[in-house]
Amino acid sequence: MDVNQAGLFDSQIIHLASFAGHCEDVTEAARLGANLNAIGDLGLSPLHYAILGGCPRTVKLLLSLGSDKSIENEFGESALGMAQMLELHEVSVLLGSAELAPSFGHDAAGHAKQRWLDFKDIQEGNWGPSCE
Image 1 (cartoon, rainbow, N blue to C red):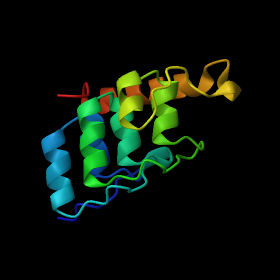
Image 2: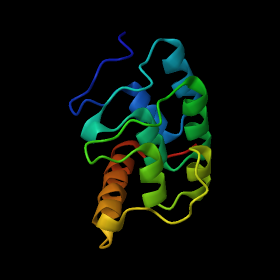
Image 3: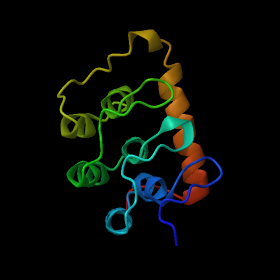
Image 4: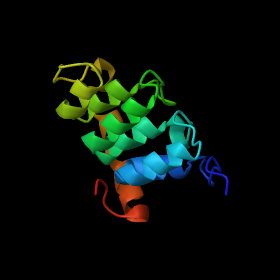
């Protein structure tokens, strides 16, 4: 079994486990050599997926395992930027910022935020609700 095998949209087991908030699976994938900074669908790292899943525990785990929080997705958004955009205060604090308000002046209409909420809905439709 290749723990880094990518699916149709470049996502890997580590991405799916991170989104779902399955910390035991994230830990096991890392133990088996999963790339904690693998780039999946839309340029998302496992940390981005964990943020979309909304589970602070998974974000904390990925950071403790060495995930790179500076990776930007295809839209130029870091993990912190995404957390702020989605108004995930607890996650923003874990990523090193106590700011409550997103700093995305170019997204005044909320299109980027809605893009990620729609993407999350699609993922939940495929894999069920996140954060066990």
